[in-house]
Length: 504
Image (cartoon, rainbow, N blue to C red; front, side, top):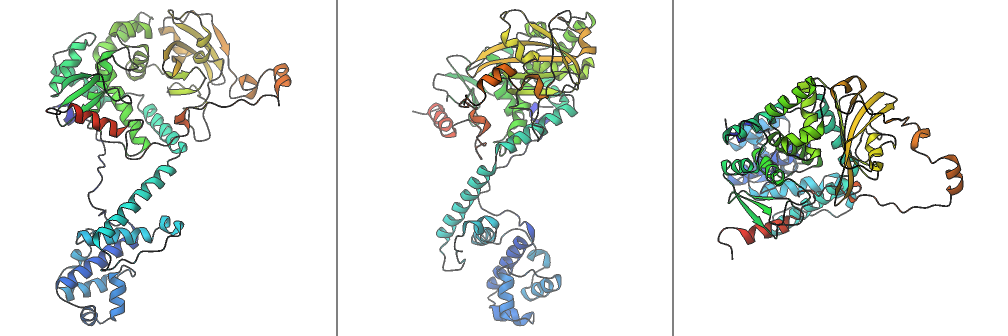
């Protein structure tokens, strides 16, 4: 079975060439039925009066029927079908009878909808006197207006809700995706890799196996880590190193993962997040193959010496990749509940996952991302730990129990982040670092814990300080509709045009 045939089902939402979606709701049904009646009537050379006489109705009633202003009954449709020498099924077909009719239906639908009414724009009379090119322009403009309106409506609340739903789905399956594990195993088997860490040569072999050649360019668009040219079967990578990464394999394997999983351009934030999770998961499953990683972890558990650092070193990956991979395998293969956090030095949560009962800070929608972690938690305390070579371990007593956590800090262009993996107290017996004496107490979400300054400090400065906030742009910006988030599509297309075979 090829990897692509095992790929998770994704939704390819290519924009239609014509505005001919199946009608939705009674009004749209009536519009399409009316246009089909008019189309068949004129094709048979019948006038309104001819059809009206044939079905024993007034011409004005037939006109209202053809204009979609009256919902036809089955009996009326049967009479019209007999008069036109066709079937009721033909009249009820959801497809517009012609391109012109499709455009007219779309414009009528929009003009009767809430967006057009809210704008207070005078309706355009849709008739034979309206040229088709003018009709096309109006329909295109209204489609863009709807797109911009939808983009504006895609608030940060929508993005946070998508994050919350995705985390709930991941928790429900213990962050383990068997389909992706199967794809990774098949790819590695196909290139003959059966044991141990995946060398860069194997990553290159996977690209060749999938039919791609590698090209390193100095002018790769700044908003990208890699670019796939599916037309010419090329993968473009930066010639000056992998941006923001210490592992040259990751950017290549992530790009190939999206291809294998048949990801299409995301049309909403939820789809974007799921694609990113799937690509990251498949990349990690290739870098730390399930069979070898589980063997390593089971041996470490038997020796009561599980260590994220040791997992990192055994497979030559980053600490964050090792921590992610541990959460994929810990519950399914080791029976250990776990939580993971990536926290910015400001205290804001960047990524989080849990299935061990720990209570992350959350807003009213249950959203964790963007919330601030208690100052007493390991993920915050580690920033004050001077030793960057040794792992930091800590026990934290919380309202939901005591948790042990190991954490490390890494520097990025966006600032410093801590990456932490934790387990309930009952599970710490399997881990290196359990002998630590570092311990703290968190009473959050109680305000008395760390949300307010100490009384003497607060009394001195309350009312005398007004800080200027420095929020991340992602906190306020909606995902651009119809574009890969954060990527300048024009820049990517121009890059591909410059480097396509035979160009310039």
